[in-house]
Length: 468
Image (cartoon, rainbow, N blue to C red; front, side, top):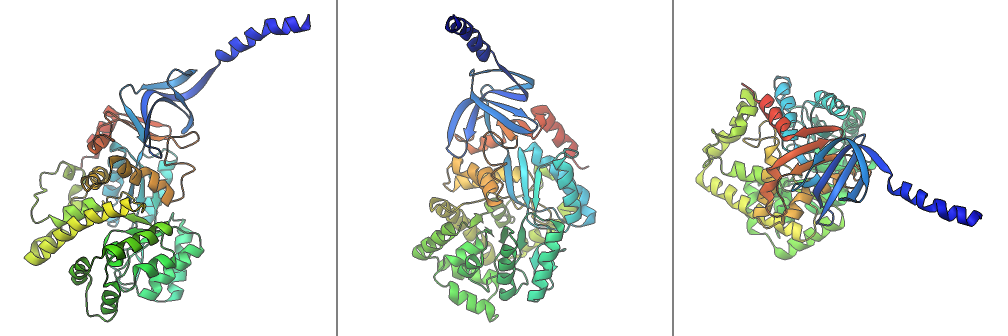
């Protein structure tokens, strides 16, 4: 009798289980989800609550209720973009301009930025905290704060070190500021203090990125513990058969940075380069090619930017900072101009070779004050385009933004993929960027934590970012 009663009730329990309805803050339905780690595109629903992904399911696999729903039929969903090299800088007079940049990043689907050093640290920290609490619209900011450099440093706000004691004090101050990583610059720092700064920062658990003075070798830099190389000049040096000779001449004052370029380019060696690529890969060193800004600056003497539509978001103060690089380009000799363009072409090929060798690249625009016509927001998409133009696949180019960005800063628990538990920083595109990388700009909606920005709201952000 008991068994018969149990069997008669079983269908009721099974039926109840099938009818369970889960409730979420937001449902994104019918999306073509691009999973960067595998390259697969899957037809899925994404469910979000409290600013995190709660579930990912095949379309039609369960019942649900949501406070808000986005029908992403015919659309492509991927993690929000990361710009892995920007600058928030220019002093107090340009503070408002820099704050205005935050809108441009979100309007371009960039939900995270890596600020690679500047002189607005206290303001940047304030913005960072307000963005985290959703009091301010902008991307998540990971910042280096002030750069470490030598005496009479090129950039305002840098921590100038002349001794090992100075290095320790500089890192003490960065720890007190609670920066997210350490950035080392190369304009005045001595070889000894440069390597000491890397080693000491690593002992303290920091991720370290930077330029590299030509007075040290790339091997020395990697051995000291460098995590990320900003720009390709330093990779080229480590790939040249005459690196030791150039390093010696630099230390003796017989050669300058720009004079070294043709010598290193002419001595590029395939076998030396492959050994360098292997070492970078084995030591998990990331490389930031910054190809778009290189191309932009290399052709300042040929391209008229006065009609660029993004100039209206910059303001006169930022545009004024562009003049130094413009004057330098226009006043350069014909030989210097040709060398710069030759170098730009070479760097595109070098980025492709690094990617083919399995070295992890980071997409970074280097946008900000002083970097002429390299605009916050849109320049990250231009960087991806230049990568693809040089033979990097669209999938690999996309990986250099979000997936690799999260890996570099050890943020993979929260970012870098579309999976359960991750922060819901997402972008919905109207076309497939795997088929054409320019589709990364065809943005339908941006989700930043619990905030949702429709296409019209993104346009409104741009409208509000115009500086008269």
